[in-house]
Image (cartoon, rainbow, N blue to C red):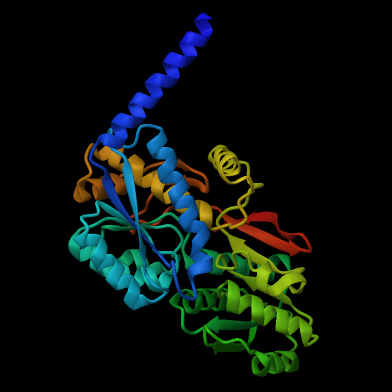
Length: 374
């Protein structure tokens, strides 16, 4: 009986605390992602995990006794839409911004938020120039220079590949930069680039490129595009009879939906995988399963969870929801324990020594293969 009373008291106390938090003035945080347009399906898993993080924070008392209010703003999958969403975040009085996902969107947002003095944490924009906008701009993912060079070394030293074709989505800054970093490192390592070719992001027919690829017979193809364009190209290449190994970057999330079994034997760099034994990763997987009844399938989505959790930690350390104090606290971040690894920032507000996970595809999807050195 005493145990039951103690349990009821604990539950009542917890509910009282939660009600007190919800009654307090919320801390407004804008989450800018693609809720419509070509990038929406690619962004959706990150939105879900950002919301999951905010929910967990509020269930545990919020930040500084105040709830975190995550305000979703749609960038409509465009750079212009991203700029407008950033302006809207400032107008709404957001203390900070989480987002965007695609580098071209973050590149449009960053100068605006820097100008207004609003801290921004992008979960997954890997283009190096994103954080160069100024001291209010941060990221929790690795940068393209790291993953492009790491994949080039893997291709030369582990796969013993000598000839490669590089295909880039010319509409996306991410794809162009990542392709450039790979090419430079691959050539420096003694490899040969047979062809460097661009394509449009909304393309659906890649027959011309594939014919040229078949004539050159590359040992591998580096394809640092996004899910839809990369998946369609790989499926069409396999259907044409092209025999090669495809290599991709972290934007290949859930690419199986477009490429299917044509992916088998391909490799991808990624920021996370459920098999990597990190305590916070196991915790995230558990609460995700408890809420949704399924595993996390998107390898970039945990970055959004980490971004929100890191922001809450910075607000707590700042002792206020003041944007400048939050920015200063973020800059002092050292050894933050995240689901995607430990986060400490360098002078460019990029995380140092973030894991670069290498995945290999088989009929059951992407499997952990190894962790690459920077």
